[in-house]
Length: 317
Image (cartoon, rainbow, N blue to C red; front, side):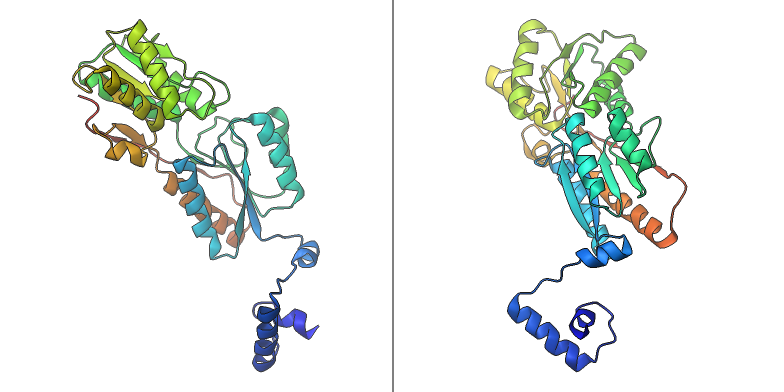
């Protein structure tokens, strides 16, 4: 019993005795098993998080900031990878809920009906991120992907360009990419412009290769295109590379814009105009909200909107 007490923070065991016990535990490589404590308290020390991609720098930034904000509370992240698949998200959510997390943070605001029911009936806080769903489950920290791309269209049109295309966002798997594509169409129609130059790039995650292939297709079928807005900076970099390979000058002959404010877009030549969705801010605010909930108990549903920033660089004229 003395050993058990000494291994817990803030115990009343004599400091000299506790030091000897901790020294022995360190020498043995002993790790405290918290299972019994979790069963008794009905609380765990982790927050469940789902992301669609593990090699996407934006989602990595969100998770990193969330992790930093939760460490002070002694909470760890249990990460689930959905691969842009809502059925996989459903499977993961069920598994994660069985482990009784302190909270669940999910990427996106669109889910299968069963996933939604599970999250609505969960007895822990749920935060949807990277989106602004019309009917949120609980708490929301995100932005409108459609509105963000509309701001990019407005910028390109302000430069006197009218023959504008969009690459990506052509499958239901990437719901945020699809919203960006819809935002492009809505903005073009608002300006009274042709919104039919929509180039498929395939299932997510869209890479540089898909962006290059899509740009080659666009230039072959619609060579008079004046500007291209891509679903991500990675596809925009691929489109830029395709133009350079073909001898098409950017931005003199065609402007290119992306989404995400990835590092590659800031260091390539020409640098790529983009939308910065502030991924670290999303993670920071999610951590702050969870800490508020842990301190104050259940809160009314919170909706915090992040305003993406237009970053104008050399690839648009």
